[in-house]
Image (cartoon, rainbow over all chains, first blue to last red; front, side):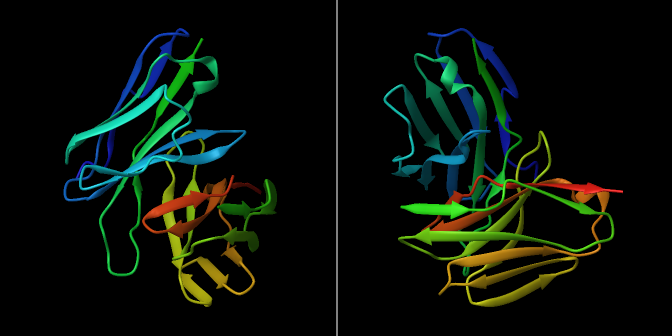
Length: 115
Length: 108
């Protein structure tokens, strides 16, 4: 398997622009997670899905952020409008429900810079 | 909510043993995870503890005390490639809440 795939790997945009980050989870995994990582706040869970349904979005910073999972093999995280404080590395991870625990497999991340 | 604390930075010598501590306060718990993250890369899974005690996996071991809200990751026979950030995470349902990570520098 190719692992979790994210695109783009790097994104540089100007304040006010819309940004869309994409994720393809590992085939057969039924959980998908979006994280944001910064030096100040560490790795924060934004939202996660189970079988394409959002389960917990309490980590989404504000209404400018939205996430969708239209099918089992694709998810998007959208920021509109973007602000400089959104600059971070955004990771997508997926996992499969297990008997004892579900190990999360992370994608390579998207490094977002908002100028 | 979750409160997870671990040291920000540690330095150790190649060949030595290092212990990275993690304390947590949580309203829900279904396991303690350790992840390794090299600079510029994604986190990768190292270990999982749900019961009290020590789990050993090669050069890495992880310990958990649920009553004390305490875990540690023990790295033996340190190698230069072990220089990385080590993230402690508490499982709650199917979500993970991560600490800010401990940056470990291994020196010759």
